[in-house]
Structure formats: structure tokens, C-alpha cells
Image (cartoon, rainbow, N blue to C red):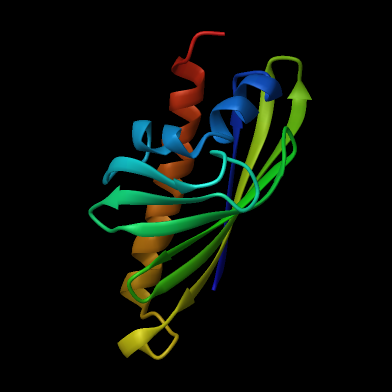
Length: 142
């Protein structure tokens, strides 16, 4: 299942990319995350591994980093594997377009599918995460 959510951020692309490219920042804006642990590699660099700890724990791996344009990583949790691609583009010197593209694969008892309630919850969460990232970036000093 693939979900895409977009928004415009009132911040230059360089600032937005710097905040996006550091996975440790996620605990500052993602609801339910309480800690970030770097497992291996340079934080945010391709091949680096990390763990998000919170309501649900996820093991992550940075796949590619072409900032300020694109940043891709995977998250693996209980019964879920997600490929996350964040894309940034310049709208003006002080405004950035942000696209969050997530590909979900479900395993375990669900047999690789998710019911309508789960899909609605994931869509709502994705939208909230995008808006929370926007607020986080816009609140940071330039």
C-alpha cells in the first residue's frame, strides 16, 4: 500500500533539508516517539542504521540521501515494513514543498493486507506527521 501526503513549508529548502536529514530530530515532532538510538554508521548517511523507540519500535536504515532534494529510509516494526521517501522542492527562497511518500508492506497474521480501519488510521497519522514536521521546521530559528 502506498500513501503520499504533501504540504508547503514556510522555510528555505536548505533549512528544511538540514532538519529532515537528521533522523534524531524525528523525536521532536513525531507523536509516540520517545527516543532515537544510532546503531551503526554516520547518522543520516546511506547504510546507517538506527532505532526509533516509542509506542511502536522501528529499526531503520538510511537507503539514500540526496539532500536537499530527497531522503529515503526504511522502517521495520512488528508486522510492518515501510519505505519512506521524503522529497523537497523550492517554491521560493523562503518556501519549500514537502512530499512524504510511504510504501507499506504488512506481514504476520494480516497476511500482507490491512483492513479499512487500519488504512484510515495510517492515512490520518501520515497527515498528522507531515503537519507536525511542517510546524517543527517553521518553529526553528533560521
